[in-house]
Amino acid sequence: MEINLIKENIEYEQLLGENTVDTVVKEEFVIPDTHPDVKEILMLDVKAFINSKEIIEDKVYIEGQIQYNVLYITNNQQRTDVENVIYSSTFSNTIDVTGAMPEMLCDTECLVEHMECRIVNERKICLEGILKSKCEVYKNFSFQVVKDIDAVKDVQYLKNPTSIDKVTRNFTGELIGKANIKVPMDKPEIAKIVKYDINIHKKEVKLYDGKIQINAYAFINMIYKGKDSRELIYIEHEVMLNKELDLDDVNPYMDNYTSFKVDAMEYDIKEDDLGEKRIIDVEFMIKTNTRAMHKEEVDMIEDVYSPTTKLEMDKKDFDLNVMQGQLLTETLVKGDIELDSNMAKPTKVIMSNASVCITDKRVIEDKVIVEGVMNVTVLYRSDDEQKYLSAVTEEIPFTCGVDILGAKINMSSMCKVALENINVDIEAGNMAVRAVVKVYARVNYMVKKRFLVDVYPVEGEAPEKKASITIYVVQVADTLWKIAKKYNTTIQEIARVNQIEDTNVIKVSQKLIIPGRIVI
Image: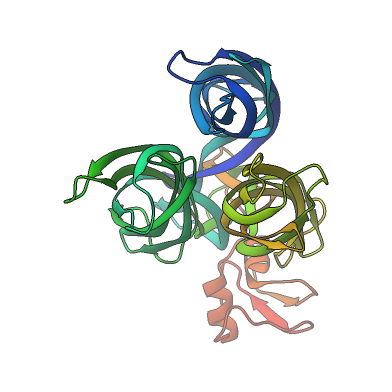
């Protein structure tokens, strides 16, 4: 017998493993000759980026860059002032992930867990801290199963729909943003920008047939020194971003998660019509990565036989990754920063910024519990002439429950957090912090499924039929398929002889006529 097997290629992605590693940072830097001496460290702003990653066997090698922006009070006997100095350094480390291989996909991120700056002398500072780098390694699986059979002679097969979770692939995109920021006349002219940052929020990603629509807002915030002034002025500006990506592999029924990363930012200070430096042209790039996931229903052959030919089947077990569910939610993070008695009393908050990271996660019944820390820095003004500017830093812990129906304690999870917005008010001499944090959680589990991978005829006598008809009494768990296979006939023959209209419905104790070589 000739048998032509029509096969389906099954591809899916599975989280192989994740791990974190701490990198100890200790750097000494000299204050440039163009800058005044250091009297007191006001604020330290640190950003860490992973520039490259390489998977070697059981390890992920990462290289990155750290950018430091140090704001300090100058050692000037004439008048205290504020200055900033920017440094950079590189780092590298290795993250252990058992089973990792070079051809696998890897996601990485780096967070500043702790960083402090101390004065060595008036011309030298020391930066010490810890970076926490995390990686997730995904393995792509691919195997072929029998989906259909085209045979010269009659072959009976039973199909059963199977749901398979697939990650279509990762889609990368770039959002280019521009802003023209004008400083109003009631604020001093720009002498120097000492700090700038961009936070991406109000993110919205929609999938359509063959395209992805990405919408977001870039919140630009800057601090500058006023001309002929020691004051620090805070300005902010919001830019709407949107882009449409044409991608053949997506449709609106897919689930997705998109990450946003500020990749580059440049600014240029220009003069207005009066010749004053009040215009800031900003240009920046945001890189996005969208992972589209969907459940695909595939009709798989579960059983095969032939009334006229002896057939053998090969079946194999495969471990499949199943997504139980995912959800993007918000949580309100609140906390009070109490100021020490030796600190200046605040009269005005100049600016506040924060970063968030996950410290622990666990899956319980119908929920993922995400624990994290928000690291907040507040720069504020005081009426104290000697300490007219001060800054305070505080870690505020938070916990969020993400509801995912069907989640069980033995399932695994992938979680991400991002700061949406933050607000700090002065209350009773302390700082009241209120922030909104976006929390994303996805729950997966492994299931073992058996698939038919090959069917072939074997030598030997053809299956025998009874010489006459047989009366069969239907038993519990019987189906027409089981009965037809047992007696080397077909469902259609049994249905025709017994005048069965719906081949999916038979009753226990029902008597069926099973045709033999001669049907009466």
